[in-house]
Amino acid sequence: MSQADRARDLYAEALVWDAHSCLPLAPGIDVGVLARHRASGVSYVSINVGMDFNPLAQCIRVLAAFRGWIARHGDDVVLAGSVADVLAAKRAGKLAVSFDLEGSDMIEGDLDMLRLYRDLGVRQIHFAYNRDNKVAGGCHGADIGLTPFGKLVVAAVNDLGLIMDCSHTGHRSSLDIMAASRKPVVFSHTCVRALQEHPRNVRDDQIDACARTGGVVGITGIGLFLGQNRVETELYARHIDYVAQRVGAAHAGFGLDFEFLTSASDTPPGFEPTAWWPPEHYRGRGLGASKFVQPEQIRDLPEALLRLGYSDADILGVLGKNFLRVAEATWGP
Ligand SMILES: [Zn+2]
Image 1 (cartoon, rainbow, N blue to C red):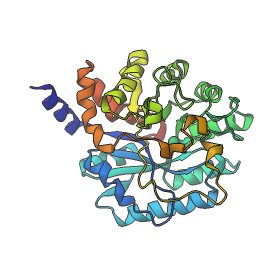
Image 2 (spheres, rainbow, N blue to C red):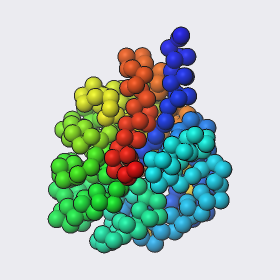
Image 3 (cartoon, helix red, strand yellow):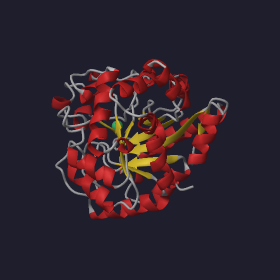
């Protein structure tokens, strides 16, 4: 059997888990654009419903819109609340979706808000979006540690069975979170700092700490983080390979962070992009400056990993089983 045939067979069998992608955060958005994920063989995708700069009211409106769209399109997409839901959706040929929060300002200092978000379909959360907040430090912040309130948030997130995510989080805070968490911690979408110097990318000690929790480092398809704004599958696979060589393939995965319909404006009034995406790290234009790995490229990942010498089991893990393991340990049965 040729390597290409073997890769195709592997992909056909795989549960494919995209730990993070983005739709515009506006009511009336056509969630149907996720058909590209489904057509690309993706089984599950976590879609964000708010960053730290999105006020609570906007997050709730977005949740209402996404939930409404999914409810009206149950033949194609299902809102997944459990691992069983994800597996059932795959068997039925549907795309499973749940939601994530990129930051914690939208809980407004109230731990009970975490339960509300969970009830509305949120299954993954990180604590700070690039900037420092009352819970944790952001990757473009002053490298503060997890705050006293942040420690309470870690415990509540563990108790509620949400996946704890350290993407966008500052170095010190991420290490504090991983030390404090009783459950596996992930980086849903990041790249490797040793391959590309960028504050959004993880250092080796963060990769090591993530693996110690039983977590997964999900490599993101953002060209500015992958290196020189390049988005070839080989380069993408090299970041996965780095994590796998350092801590084992069981701790590598992917979170594309594919941005659909980026021309739509969804930022709140008075929003100042340079405050969240420092110009020196984003060629002055925020994420708009970046190229993105396309959902269709995930199909090419198995062959790229076979060429690097990975086993079938390793590749199935990277494609989705590793994040599925974290979901089982976190969401519960
Ligand atoms: Zn993000």
